[in-house]
Image 1 (cartoon, rainbow, N blue to C red):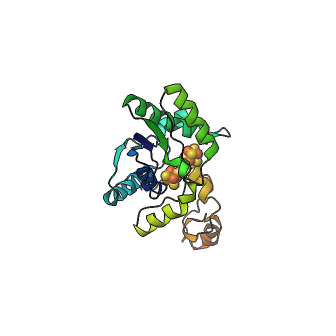
Image 2: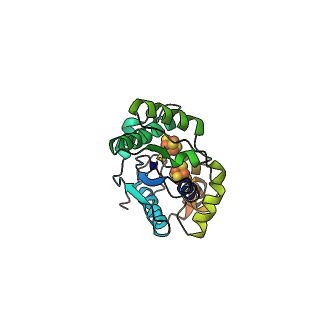
Image 3: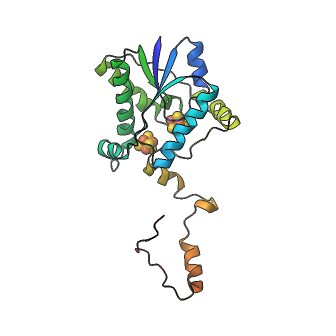
Length: 211
Ligand code: SF4
Ligand code: SF4
């Protein structure tokens, strides 16, 4: 059975891929993730998948176009449920591709993550399956999450720190206690006296630094 597997990075793929293969599926990966920002993070995740492929031969179709604009057009990021739009956007593309290229079914690594809304993903996938007349393969490999992470760690595969969009990056790090990433407004005040006569930056001032 030819399965199109939507993939957003290598983390949730490491362990479930073997399970799918054991079940006899011929798996083709499908990377389409306009939700991953900024650009260097997007490229990092593509690279992580390629590193994964070196040890785990699996065909993957990559859409390497950075999709920030598409994401902002299609996702109601100010509403309460931006993730539903984001899931639908990516799964719609995967389902359409699977239908067009006569795969037997589609599914996504998002369903293998403990951090995604599993129920919502399943509902959206089932709806798209009906609309596009392409079977959806439901598997719940969330119990393999830790194992997947272990494999990624051992193989030095990049593991991302946040879901993907700039909003998730903000939510992940806004209250971080890691020194490197902490806000520095307090420290800034302490340093004001050592500015050597340079005007201190005010809160709303725009930084003109070019890089
Ligand atoms: S759900 Fe998150 S951790 Fe899992 S493959 Fe997608 S981006 Fe990676
Ligand atoms: S948090 Fe993740 S699933 Fe939700 S909109 Fe952002 S990238 Fe998409």
